[in-house]
Amino acid sequence: MTTSTSTSSTSTEGDPMTDATLLAEPAPGLQAAPGRGGGLLVRGLRKRLGGRDVVAGIDLDVAPGELVSLLGPSGCGKTTTLRMVAGFLPVDDGTVAMGGRDVTDTGPERRPSAMVFQNYALWPHMTVTQNVAFPLRTRRVPKQQTAERVRAALELVGLSHHATSKPTAISGGEQQRVALARAVVQEPDVLLLDEPLSNLDAKLRVSVRDEIRRIQQRLGITTVIVTHDQDEALSVSDRIAVMHDGRIEQIAAPAELYARPATEFVASFIGSTSAVGGRFAIGVDSRPGDTVLVRPEQVVLCDDSPLTATVSRVLMRGHFAEVVLRADDDELRAFVSGPPPSVGHAVGVRLGDVLVYREGVLVGGAR
Ligand SMILES: Nc1ncnc2c1ncn2[C@@H]1O[C@H](COP(=O)(O)OP(=O)(O)OP(=O)(O)O)[C@@H](O)[C@H]1O
Ligand SMILES: [Mg+2]
Image 1 (cartoon, rainbow, N blue to C red):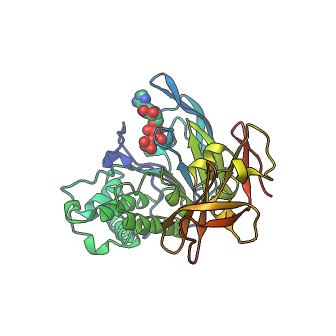
Image 2 (tube, protein in one colour; image 1 turned 90 degrees about the vertical axis):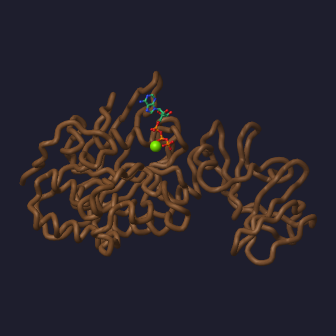
Image 3 (cartoon, rainbow, N blue to C red; image 1 turned 30 degrees about the horizontal axis):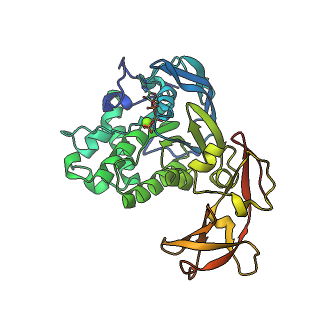
């Protein structure tokens, strides 16, 4: 089996000429084989920049065909991590393996991966087809095969009708899909996406992210998506790795991450929580100094509870209302479907599962 026919040497991030990576052997259309190239294995990844550990020891296993999101606040090291995985930034320490092969010292164009950068940098003077064909041209893939793969990639992202358009003549969402097509046309084993939806409006974000998930599942590509948007991560991922200060705090399936955030940071970063204190904390199994949090859907309004609070605000959220409840100086938020209570009224409150953190780490909670 041939590996890469590339003759390119150094690589520059964001340059479409060099986003391209290893090509599979010639194939008609695009190859779809779930989990085809094996997974991704990252061990002890470190990077020191500007005198501090920007990436401070990352371990990450992504199974063949799995989609994992790297989620975390701005500056936590997501892009730096992804660039090391893709090979655009040398590691200070640690290893990266793809499909069981150590690629730590392999250049990006020789890794079986393709990366879509946040600034997807399409060539303005080239048509959509020429943009998508670019990585295949630099690899000297035969013309007819290139044409077939490009056609298949454009069909996959729903842009066949724009094959001859210039990037300036299509919308931002369509441009982002061209960048995606330019990555999948390479038939990578590992697809790396850095904030792929960043330039889209709210509605397009949802449709393009669903599209990415559909394509990823259809082709069975092992995928890492970097995002700081929890909704995005929760809705497309098999698992989410929550990053904080250069480390992964927790990696788990979306439902597990939401229900049992392992650290106080993860609890506050994913979904909404209220601090449980004062009267609300009566009956909660915790020690002084612990932090007790509750999700809004675990705050239940009921007539027969001895614990009462006053409705201080009602925020309509569409098919449900967020109700802010006060007791003395303490405040809880509840989700209420159906007609919400009126502001100023006293209501009974019962708490379902709470989350108890001691020194930032989950120690209990279910009641
Ligand atoms: N070349 C560099 N020199 C010094 N510091 C750097 C360099 N590159 C990145 N950093 C710092 O490393 C930290 C992590 O950067 P990184 O781009 O990985 O963050 P991120 O999680 O992707 O954030 P965002 O969500 O804003 O994109 C930041 O504080 C950044 O300022
Ligand atoms: Mg970033």
